[in-house]
Length: 151
Image (cartoon, rainbow, N blue to C red; front, side):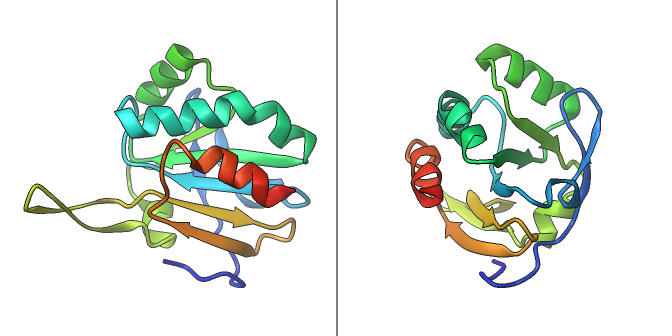
């Protein structure tokens, strides 16, 4: 994992519509950057819907919410439409940001070892520096936790 106090790696990734976003374009705003394993899975859906419900409060606090997974642009589009998600979902099929933020790690499930995205949320300050790192977050609690961090 990256550490608090370090410069957040910039990225250039497509959203659900194929529009390209970079982290640097959000300078001047706080960024909630969360990494999740897959669209439409139980935990990831709870986390995304939580951010969706609280989204107006993040906007009031001049914060941007960005979710990144290795799912395709079309998967993100279906996911965002199905759950009416108002924030940015970015597709990282090449794992560039996922690896840059050191969230591509060995995971164990039912005794099986595989590589995957470890659910992690970064709070990035207005200058593009990592303010706080939240490792192995609880999906359902993470949106409120991040809103509380902004207060």
